[in-house]
Image 1 (cartoon, rainbow, N blue to C red):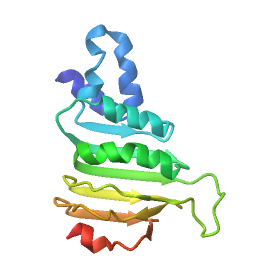
Image 2: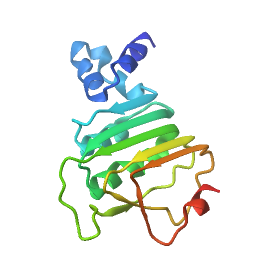
Image 3: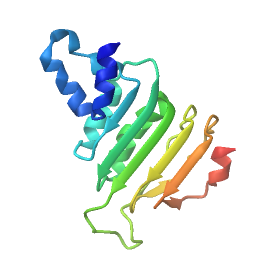
Image 4: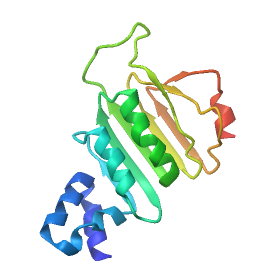
Length: 161
């Protein structure tokens, strides 16, 4: 348990996973962390792999920072996160590449239903967001949308009520 506390202080799951080279006993300790933090240098596909490998009974906090994410890379890990998260999601997509489509964005993806999430904070840059057509964010008490473009016919209130 002390080792988990130490790894939580690192606040970078790639670095926490690399500590496994120090001892065989540490090999999979990072997979038991109740919080996961991904810094912008992480490949979004590694986020998916880390969430798939994660073994803690609950995931209380998921902090993801990405740069110029594509809709495909977001969908790849958000589906897994939606099933696992029981606390807080913080997602920030920073823009560095300015190539946009005719609508002034980089495409849209459907936000999966985070049934057990208590708070969600999204900053998507130029990515569009489609509200899920089914499911309810039953435990959600705090929603922050910053630089989010909503798409589709589903209403945000339908998913949140």
